[in-house]
Length: 369
Image 1 (cartoon, rainbow, N blue to C red):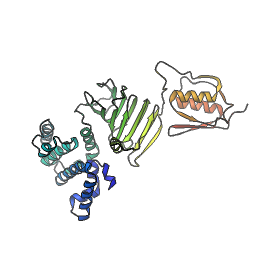
Image 2: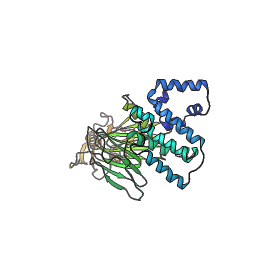
Image 3: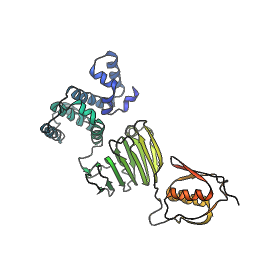
Image 4: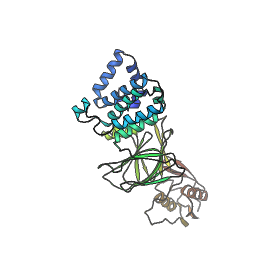
């Protein structure tokens, strides 16, 4: 039962046990879901929304015509207009409907009215239901930017943050962010340069991942069809959650997440449900703006070289200090990226290196005097 306490509407609809409860009455199954609602009352709205939507979609099979499609959007627009719910008894009793219930109620009515088939929903559930659920929960206004060109497009957000939307990608965001947070919904690939504001975390929702930052620059590569969405950090730090873990963290629970610093990336395997973290392919120096490291080494200890690389790129280099204490190096490395620099250093001292997630481990016999 515990696994259902974080289920979203689309996850309920996908679940065989939930669908068996809807499709056929069985005392044991009925008792299970009644106990679930008693034990987790905060999930009842999601459960009931999933029930309504499942029934509406399961019973109807017709594909809507173009005219029906236009009617559908007309109903959605009318139903989501402020004041459209004033006649509902539930709203009169509580003052308002929660956003996800409001959206799904409208969706269920529209789908039932127009006959949008279950198989259409099944085909698009990973795209539309997840995206619509995010929009509903984050309460973003309908401001969307879609890049249908062959070139990246640049946008300036109201807080001064900069956003680059890559071809085939789309973002939704508020014209004016809320008092306590800044939220973006991304479908595809986007580059973010976030204006620092410790009082307003910057949160990006994308393909089952949630990236939370304060002030930094990073890339989220998370097209809907991708089974391995990725986050890449250029400067600063970010926290990366699955959507499920992020929701639990918002309720005050300590949840698993990946902490990324500059020149680190992580990808999420949707099948195995795990993260893989590593340095980005071409790391950038992380020095303060206007400063530059000197990579032109002239007969210096390799320990000094490794320390310079660590401080410049924000990486960790592990090696046997005793074995390599007599190794000196002379090499101009100014124009080389990090991994090419490591190649040259290791070839010079007769060593090798391996990358283990965010660590670089150098191994070698040492240098004779």
